[in-house]
Length: 194
Image (tube, rainbow, N blue to C red; front, side, top):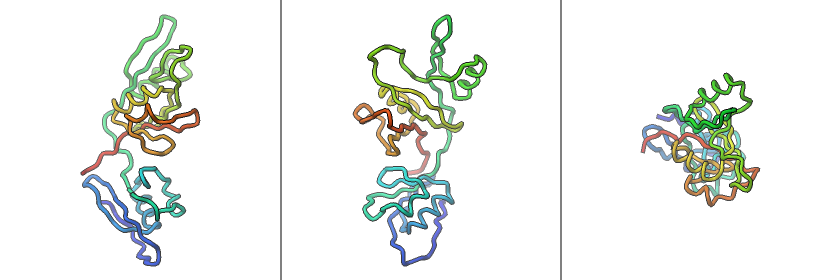
């Protein structure tokens, strides 16, 4: 069970916090310092109204108007995700499925400068691409993707999509307003209870 760290300070206002773990959700009343301490001690993520918040920013956050405060466990791994990779050489392009370590090994072996995942061909007037950070157990990969590619990759890998630190339903990506400065992250979904 998640340890709840209590400061026993009754002068601070308390907030309703939902704590998710492998056994389900627990709803508790906590002060800002308790939320921060519990999140740090359990390496959990803090979401305020479905927006990921830096744990150290909780004490300065306006929680009075918050509709939902959730502590979610950090990423838990499963099988290694694979990505569609186009390998270009003098003989043409080859499309293969590879894990991140396989991409790195292939790029190193072929003295490639970088690996580009799930990108369309370079055709004038094609759909715009966006910089996407894909996280997994081995770290983070930065790729260029179109909106349909972001949606397809998120759905295929059961990943969560964050746009500027706000959780977005993968099926809503096509209608989401994205620009070159948007920070887009695909993260493995949390594994939990009820």
